[in-house]
Amino acid sequence: MRGVAVRCVFCRIVSGDERAVKVYEDELCLAIMDIAPVNRGHLLVIPKKHYETILEMPLKEASHIFGVACMLAKAVKRAVGAEGINIVQNNGRAAWQHVFHVHIHVIPRWIGDKLDLYWPASLSSFELLEEVASSIRRELEELKT
View 1: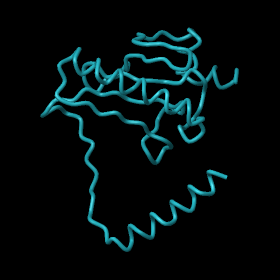
View 2: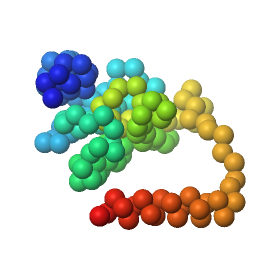
View 3: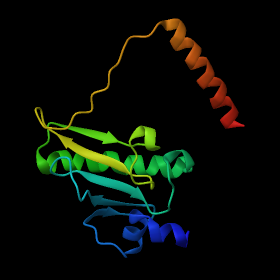
View 4: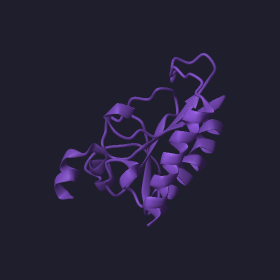
């Protein structure tokens, strides 16, 4: 863990070795202002314990940080007068994760702002959807055992 803390900017923030503007803190997580905000009020919720992705986190801790993110989203929306909020959490390089310590972005949004989260979607057949859903249900059962 000590080696991870030396390399990971969020671990350095949690330990107090790196400067950050704190918004919220409890025993499991910390919320800080993003130093390169997409919009005014953009903040990050990070677990105090190092996990590279949310897939490694115990469900109770993951649920807690998402609960904190939801609470902060309400406060951010009111504080900056946002018209909407994106709550974004990325896992792995293919999913645009750049800092490999779990973090949730709480991003205030306004109609016409510069943030573009577009992805090309296309309708799928119900047969294909059912096939994929069946595979997911099987994996879910495996994870429960």
